[in-house]
Length: 398
Image (cartoon, rainbow, N blue to C red; front, top):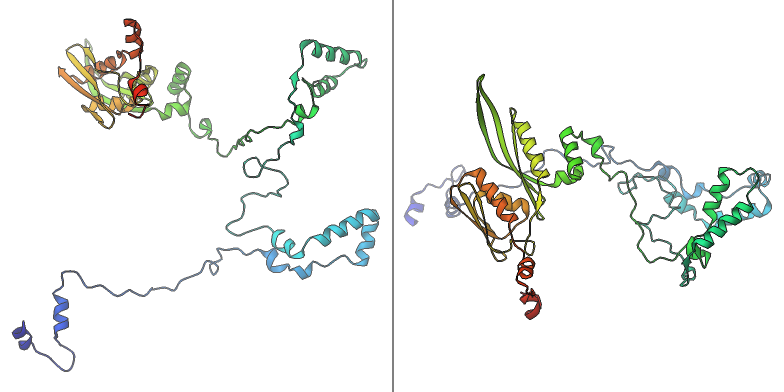
């Protein structure tokens, strides 16, 4: 390195100058850090662009402009108000600071403003602290009136009824008649320790009929199953099998599309459905609706696995489902995995023996899930009593 540096030329005009520092810098593995570039344009404030609106009421009106009433104005007010009312007006204005009128009386235009106009005269049950009835309104001896007491009230109203009664008289009777015996305040303004009800905001309520048009097939599915539109949208639906089929007739070959779909809510409901149509989308919709319509509850142990080992057989396909401990996961082929995912099963193992036809595998898996025997049923059949050992000996900590 020393001989190399000695052999390198060094010029005094700084055009070509080699030194130890420059050579050491060139042999670095990482690239040289560039200096921070200066911005091409200067920073512009939002106020210069007119994006922030200043409150005109605060800039044009000051506390000095809010002067007291003059004698001429008092004489004009005295023609409309009594001396007592005029004295109350003067006392109220004297209690209000003019600075507060300028700062708080104007309509806010800052980013933290409210999106609505509110004079804060009414109490909202969620935002504000509710005003509860006093403790004196509570009556421990409060009870409902009997049928004889209600009949007596009705009889008294009929006796005092005018000659030509109107509907308004009956409405007044229904509003003023008490249904309990005790303190009137206990019925009209009862003391309650319950939390106030949440307000029903139309803004947060999503009206699906207006935002989305529900197709006739979905409406028919809602009538058949009793599920609403939101519940149907939340179901987990997976299309497992799809292929093209051909039907040979005397007129020729008629092709159509076949779909097999599984649906579930992830909490123990599962169903499969088949659909066939000339259009792929129509076949998929038929299979989806059929799967939701055929959903059935399956038993689940601890909400994560099945009860014991079960088997299912459809044609030449045999399926074995085995329970597993927590954290094992779902270890099986893709079709059974998707069915477990729709049903909400988290720990299970499966084995498919003999034929592995996809359609028969799905049907055999559903048959095995529905053929589970609960421990209560086994104990009842054997005439025994079922005891959970974990809860008895380990306190449910296992």
